[in-house]
Structures are given as C-alpha cells and as structure tokens.
Image (cartoon, rainbow, N blue to C red):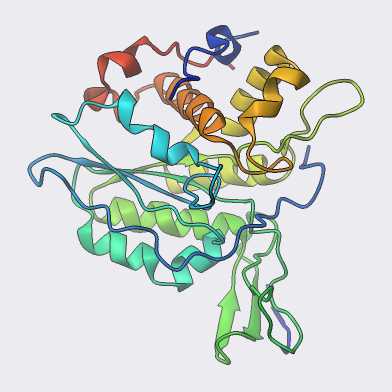
Length: 295
C-alpha cells in the first residue's frame, strides 16, 4: 500500500525489580536537539567481536544532567572478550538513523560474529513531513506507525528530495536483515517507558503499539526481542514514584546518570533472559550476576 503526500552508583537499586513478579501516555517524542555527531567510538581490539548499540537519545545523549543506557552497558562486559560500541544518537528515529547514513557506516564495519542491539520509538511518532517554513524544530523524521509494508511518498521538506517513508517495523526489519547478511545477529528492544504514571500507580506502557510492532518485526526478521518497556516499567512500579524521580534528568523522557545505570542493568537482565543469550560469551562477572528477567 502506497500513499502520497506533498510535502553507575545506582546499580544495586532494587535488584529484585528486574525479576519480580498500551501505549505511551503521550506521544513518545524525544525533545532533544538533533545531535550531529554520534561519537567516534571504534573497536578497541580488532580481533574481538563487537556489540553494537544503536538508538536515540534515551540510549546516548549529550545534554548535561542526562545520560542514556547505552553508555552504562560497558561495566557488564569484559573488554578482553568483546568490544562495546555505542553509536546511538539523539534526535533520530529508526527512519533517520537510516537516511542519515549512520546505519550504512556501521554496516561497513560490521563483521561475522558481531551483535547489534537496537532501541527506537521515541522519535518515530513525529510528523512524517512538515509544512514550510523550515525552522529549528523541523525534523521530518516520523514513520508509519505499525509493522506493515505500507509506504508514503513525500518530498522531504528538509532535503527537498523525494523520499519513500516506511513503517516502524519495516525500518527495524531492514536493520535486522542487513546485519544478518553481514553474519551478525540482532536484538530488538522495545522503547524504554516514560515517567508517566496512571491513576492506579502503574507506569503507562506501549504494549499495544511500539512494543508490539518491535516484537513483530523481530520475529519476522529472525532477531531476538527484549521487552525493555515492560522490564523497566515493572522495576519502576516496584520502586514507587518517589524513588523513580531521581532516575530522570528531565520531565520524564531522558534519564539521569543514575537512571541510565539502572536501565542498563535492566537491559542486561533482559539479555540474560534470552535463550540463547547471544552476548553471554562477553559478559563480565558483574554482567553474569544480573538475574535474568522472567516475563
């Protein structure tokens, strides 16, 4: 179907929350400025496999007082066994991570035995295109909100060029299939939850939207899936609202350094719950101690 448009100190916090036991409350938008450089992390040891991390500013962010979970994963891995490279960048959706050329740059470095973990969604709900005039808030980064093969043809307001925009699931499937063609494996994460509480004291989830589409895309393309949205939501609920407050560096989207460490541990909990865990070989002693998430 095609349509046309014109235009680290916190790691011990509540360990049991990770094993304990519909959609975002607001549009899952990343309010960070679009960053121009994702950093120049490279393989520290070219003889080792690499664990690549891609995503948006909830995974890597440069704003003072905020930090993404991707920058807190390294302590859970042994640098003598695996390289950990965080190529996530603020302001990107699954679509613009591809159209910016960032995924192609990773593909040129990707090798057999590498593993890619991805988490997008917070920017994918943005408008697909926007009307003039172009200003500092113009992003043109949204996707079709499902896991279909639908597409929309636009003239991108930022580039002035024709572009075929696909679904959220399509972009995830593209990352997975092209990684597998290079001999790498892929892991898809549902997006971390916002600090958004229901009247019943529960964290609002994306179970029937972004989480569902990410899970479907992973299954269709042959990737493993970590329901990070659910893992962290349960952990936040176990802590309670007051204890969750210092885990955020803004109103409720981007985590503080403590929150990033907390969420990185949730990621490892999810990884340890996979069967098999494709990065088990590279875990540090700290990583091995994290209990596996039990759905």
